[in-house]
Length: 396
Image 1 (cartoon, rainbow, N blue to C red):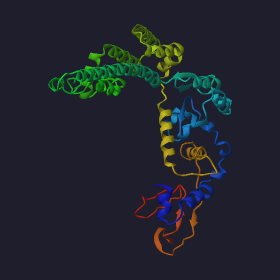
Image 2: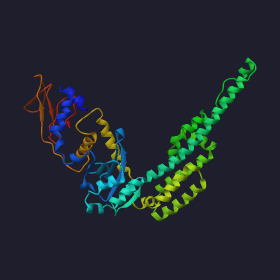
Image 3: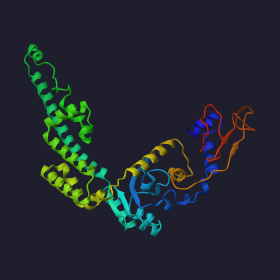
Image 4: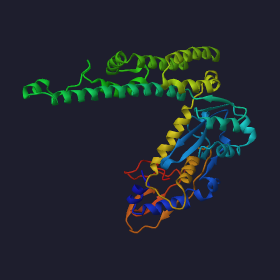
């Protein structure tokens, strides 16, 4: 339930409710990290042996670097640090404020293929093993296959446009009405599933991004036509799926290194421009990619955490505050909901009623009114009996 809806129900202004919550109830002004919350948040008590470092872009292009503890699995105690920006020097400078002994206790840090992120990890956690997230590596290969599909799509569209122009020219050069009627309207060639070739190529993006075992019947039919027309696309897709199978196979680092070397040689023989960046990435980051096969750790928990931030951030749309930035509120809420701290709430604030009309009882001996608003702190144990509200509704 939004603040505006709650305020309207009890006859007060939403702006007043926001101000009272922020200034009186939430203890926001007494928050120990309020002074620097706009730039960074640090929770050294949440550091664990296995961490994830990732970046996320919030509204208005705000980019944050987020360090999380894998053991928390995106829940309470997950947030270790949140820093505004992605510049290596600035981020590593903030993260170095974490206790040195705790930083040395970190065993692994998982990150994507960003060179800036990897440099930050090496500066801040010198004893930790750096692991590149397998899904970012697979995504790089999938994007290369998709670029090949797009290349064929433009070729197919060029062929179709040329056929349309030739048909119009032929009809224009016709000498009589009978000949023009014989030529008729231009009709595109239909494949056995009823789609044109440009439609099949355009609608095949999700096919080549999926493993073949997850295709439905319609996708299987479309894939058979696509790969029959473009054998090189089938070869590129097969290389992408081979990489996925290598990561899925439960093998040790030595076996994985051998399998990846064979796969690398096959990609080199394929010799398509779209796959050159994939080869360069494997050449530059082979050690950190193979480290995955030792620990089997991914960045899934970090991605989940980022999704929770964005989901909560979406709830703040329309809540403007000229005195503090949205990142301050975001940070404070992360502290309340996700950091490993208890923030006991004690104060109950009552807005003076405008109309003396009894509406409900919250507990025995206490009567409140239509335009009254009681703000119940978390942990108070007070139950509401308003049929329009769920029982034990926390207003925070």
